[in-house]
Image (cartoon, rainbow, N blue to C red):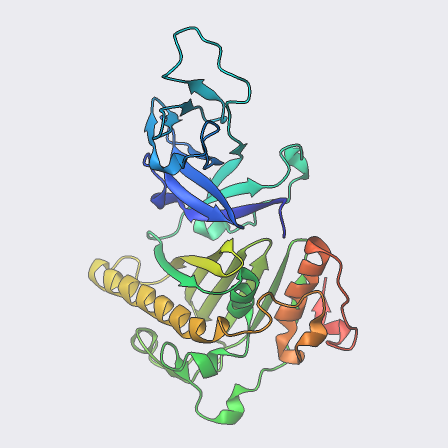
Length: 349
């Protein structure tokens, strides 16, 4: 599923000169930094006897296998076989696959797909310029879901579950009728979608209760999804804004690691209060993911049914999910999209 894309696979600060194992889409890779500090991605199995290169070490910018000491350059080509006499030619097959890597927004991105696909034909890394130089260092959250990544991503852009699932972490509405979702438009682009709608939480929990003395009538939340594994959310109360990039790392069909990068535009110059707010933001983010995990892992079918949406009864408030599945239909394989699921005017290109 979705092979020819740039996947965000790790937080930049978690990749160093000590090799880091990465399991993505059921395959094993290794990440490390070379002598110039560049992030490198290789297949994790040594070409010699299949040992894990992630158990090895970086030496002279190369990655050395822990089993027999074979050393691999950043291009995956073996540079040294210790057991061979000096001058012995290194076999051409003594190499592992290397992968293009970029770093943006505090994330490591790896291109997973055909090595023959020209760079100018690869879908772009989504743009989040506000994360390039935030007003203060970002904070981070992490949670492991026992669920397929299509389900965790749908959960992140679902517009109507928060008031039921997250009363503890976020807050509640004053009355049941306030849970109604007003009509909203989803903008569908070539590789992503976006939507924005009002927030109906009237009794805020946590730090926002103290930051905001009263509810802002124009408070709203924005959503984005970008192929293949990025969701974004922004919560804005007047001039106060908290933004998060969520990376849904598809380990395998049953496991997804979700890591988030979080920034805010307020209390950036109040060190003590700012550190407290960072801790609170991370705590709330982790609590939200824990609350989501309880339900997301129970969903059937395991993979979001983009190929036959009649398996679920979707309604107007599910516009973001329908647009998401429309993108999956386009890039992950053929599927039938029932015309009566959502009015055509509700999803705009």
